[in-house]
Image 1 (tube, one colour):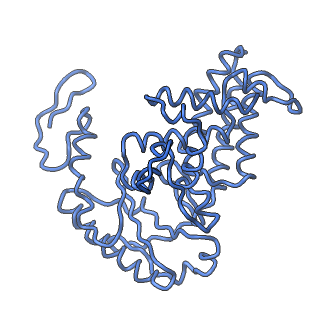
Image 2 (image 1 turned 180 degrees about the vertical axis):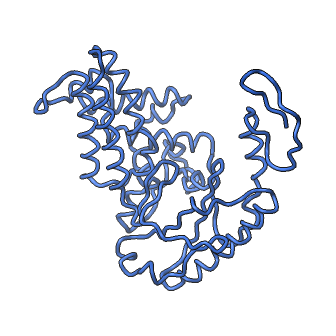
Image 3 (image 1 turned 90 degrees about the horizontal axis):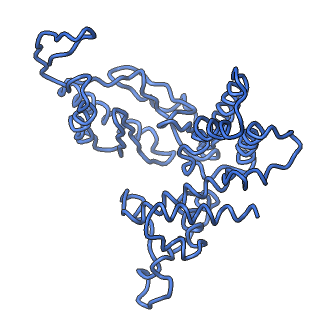
Length: 332
C-alpha cells in the first residue's frame, strides 16, 4: 500500500498482508466483504452485523439462563479465533452484555448470580441499558431513556438557536428546526412505537417548543393552526407516517425477509376472492398488551385502516404524499 502525503508526495510502498487499503473510497466495501463470513463460527446465537458492529442474541427461559451464557461464551471463543486467524481483534472494552425481558421477569433475576460473559478472559459487567445504533435500549425495553435523550437534545438545540447573533425570520427558523432538530424526532421512531402516553406527551411538548420558537408564540397559546400552516405532522402522526412508510417498503420490495414473511394478505388465507383481499392484511391473533403495541400488529392495524387510494399508490413518493395529506386532515 502507498499513501499520499499532505504536501502531495507519495510514501514508499509497504506490503500489507491483511486488512483493506486505508483511506480509499473502496475501504468500507472491501471491509464489508472481508468480514462477511464472520458469523460462520457462531453456533448457538443469532447474529446481526452492521458495518463493524456485531450483535449476538440468544433466547432462553429463566431456568436456563446460565446455560445460555455458556453458549454465548462458547461462540465468543470461536469468534475471537476467527478474528485472530484473519488479522482482526475483538474490542472487548466496547462489548456490552445485557439481559432483556419484562419488568416482572427481571424482578426475579439477580445479575450478580448469573454466570459472567467473558472475552479472552476479560469479564464483562451486565448493563442496564445500551446504545444500539443510536437507540437507547434498557433491559426492560422501556423507552424512558430514549425519550429523555431526545427531549434533552431538542431543548439544547433550541437554546443554541435562540442565542444566535442575528434574528432569523420565520422561513429561516423553519429551515433550522426541520434540519437540525426534527431528525431527533424521526430517527428510528418506528422502533419505539409502543411508548406510553406520558412519554408521547413529553415528545409532543418538545415539538411544540419548536413551533413556539419559530412563531414566537406564548406558552399558553394554542398552536395546532401553526402545524396546519407549516404542513407538519405532530409526534403521533409522524410515528404513524414512518411506520406505514416502512411497512409499505417491506411489502413492495419483500425485504427484509424476517419482517416480510410476517405479513399475509387476505387473498392468500382462503380461496374465495374478496374485493380488497390483495391490499388487506390478515390481523394476527394475540393476547398480550405488549404484542398489541408491537410494530407488527400496529402496522397492520394502521395499513388496514387506510383508504385504498393510498394503498394502491404506484410509487413510494406518491404513497408518501397521499399518506401525509390524509394525516394532516386530522387537524382540520
